[in-house]
Image (cartoon, rainbow, N blue to C red; front, side):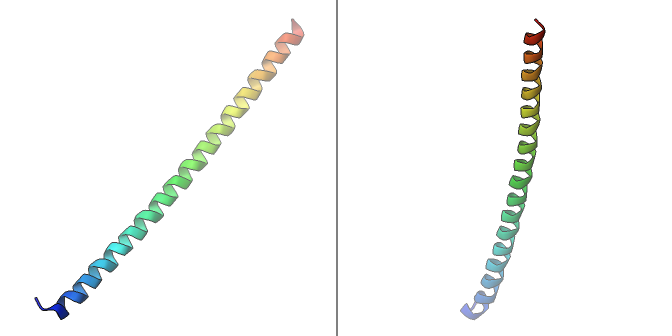
Amino acid sequence: MEESKKSPILDALVDLGSAWAAHGLDAGKLSLQNSAKALTRSAEVLEKIARELENKKKAEQKSA
């Protein structure tokens, strides 16, 4: 193959690879953001449970 015919094919492959890389990075970013949101919600639930347990413990100590 001549050098002049390789260049457009190579350019197309590089462009395609770059497009897929950008897509993969965007997908990874969204996945991490969703995981962070889920972890935040889980942490909030755990905090709420801890407060409820502490309040229950205090109430039991007052009644004892």
